[in-house]
Amino acid sequence: MSGAHVSTTINGDAVQFACPNDESLLDALRNRVGLTGVKEGCGTGDCGACSITLDGRLVCSCLVLGVEADGKEIGTVEGLADGDKLHPLQENFIKHAALQCGICTPGFLVAAKVLLERNPDPTEQEIRYALAGNLCRCTGYDKIVRAVQATAKDLRKKSKKKSR
Amino acid sequence: MRYEAPNTTKAAATLLAAEKGKAFVLAGGTDLLVRMKAGMLEPDLLVDIKQIDKMRTIAGNSTGFTIGAAVPGVEIGEHKTLGKLWPGVVEAAQLIGSDQVQGRCTIVGNLCNASPAADTVPALIAAGAKAVVVGKDKRRTMAVEKIVTGPGSTSLTKSEIIESIKLPKRDRNSGDAYLRFIPRTEMDIAVVGAAVNLTVSRGVIKSARVALGAVAPTALLVKEAADAIIGSKLDDASLERLAAACSAACNPIDDKRGTIHYRTKVAGVLGRRAATIAYERAGGKR
Image (cartoon, rainbow over all chains, first blue to last red):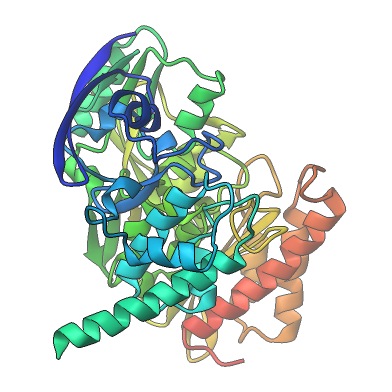
């Protein structure tokens, strides 16, 4: 199996790794870069646990090859917090107990972040559709939806303050 | 396995032609990489088409759109004018998978994957869309309904690659719609899909195309269903004739998603509903 040398930007930092051509970006991120926040649930793009952003677009990293990431910007759950300060989504997931085992959580956080950047005031239905590609097998979805709604509210307040 | 990401369509076709082993085109990878992982495919060469500028863009207006083969679903949904003129095509593209899948999946991938249940294929057929096919030495333009020949198979030769999909000139007072039935509300495969595209003049349907998915080995263009409503103001009687023609065209399978009897019935119902939406979008009032 021939391989490739890949140069990317991950969460704002330049990162290089080498991987075989048929290796998924998910495996490369976990095993070569050490970013174990991306989780493997199904490996077939159904569960969303491996969600990342690729040049700003939400994708399942299990359905991207590592070599395709060359020259691209990647965002993972590790990029959400600002040092020790958690992202409002992370704060609200804790506050609303929107997780149990936690395997699906990084994917939900990344997907919810993309949603709120695009739509700062989503309806419950919009949230449920936007997160339909993320499966949770323990908590269920209600607390997750509440946490996203609460975050949307917090972020809107913040941006209002800023604009004053 | 070699991985190549050429900058031109011609270079991609040349790579495919020169490969002695198994070569596959990689666009969004939402079907291909799943199959590779499952061990169903072992490519010797992957040709990634996402570095080809021409394939990454949507160009055009009411005189005709060209949608590049590597444009992901999310960009089709975000386009400012495409969805206004071709809402049925856009809603079919947007029905595929989750937001994560939309970030990668393409309409040409949906077409070339050649699933009988592909959502965009009936919508493209109803729209009268054409595929621009580029080979090592020549280009050809083919009607979308000529691409898929059966489940998993297409009429493309080994070195051929679809560069783009062309939507025709859009007449005023036109509308299209795509509806699919799935057992849940999101993230599933069509039990039946129905697309209708029509143009209206003073309330009378001047031209129409009706296409069905998931009810035969390939998506079907159902001329009898279109004929049932052309010349009408989409009154109840012509809608019933359209529904009957849709059901009559079905040649489905029985599977866990639906029985033959059920699919045949639902094809008529969805055809009727899609026609009603398309008619209203075209400015017709029932």
